[in-house]
Length: 257
Image (cartoon, rainbow, N blue to C red; front, side, top):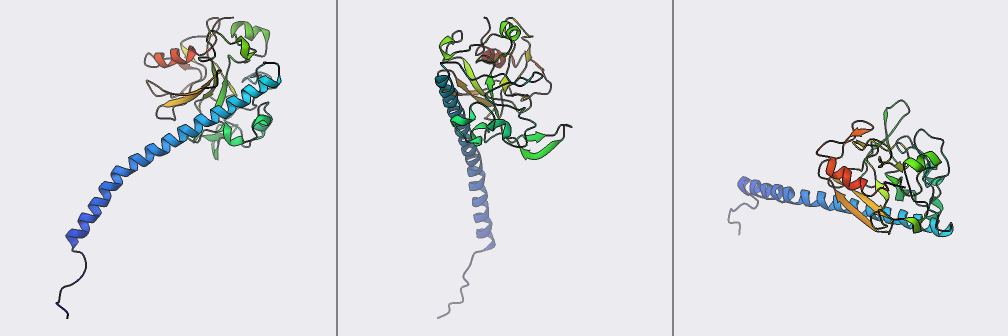
C-alpha cells in the first residue's frame, strides 16, 4: 500500500552531510600532507644512507682513501665522486661518470623527492625539467685538489684520519639548497680562509624547514633550522637570525690543518 510518503533527503539533510564531509576533509588534508612530507624525509634520508655506503665501499677498495671531491666551480674538473653543476644537468651523464656510481647504479639516489627545483639553461632561463641531483659532498672529506687549497681549507684524505670533528660529527653528504648547487662540493669558510660571515653553500629548507645530513660514522640526521634557508645571493651574508644555524653546520667542517 502506498502511504504517500516520499523517499529521499531533504535539503537540510543534504546540506548537513555536505558540511560534515567538508569538516572531515579539512581535518584529513593536513594529516595527508604531513604524511607525504614525512615520507619524503624518510626517502631522502635513505638516499643519503645508500650514498654513504657507496662512499665507504670506495674507501675500502682504495686502502682507506676517500673518494675525491675535486670538481669545484671555477676550477678544472678532475676525477670526483660526481661531476657537473646540478643546476644545468639535463641528463644523468654527470652522475653516471662519477666515481661512486658503480657502487650503486641507481640515479634516483641522487635526487631528494622533496626537491622540486628545475634545471636552468646557460642563459639563466628556468626549464620545465626537474633536476637530477640534490646532494653535495662536504669539503672536509678529500675535498681540495691543490696543495694551496688544502693548506687553507683543510680536509681529511683517509677515513682513519678523521678527527676534530670526529666521525660522528664530520659531515659527509648534505641535502643542499637548490639555489647554491653550483658544483658537487659543499663548502664553508674555515678558520684559515674565507669570510665566516658568509654562506658559500647553504643547506636545503625543503624538509619542514630543515635538511638531511650524513656523517662519517654512517648515520644520518634530520636537522630543523631556526630560520628558513633562502639563498638570494652567492655568497649569502650570515644574518643574526641565521648565525645559530650557520655555526651549527660549520662545526661539522674541519677548521684547522
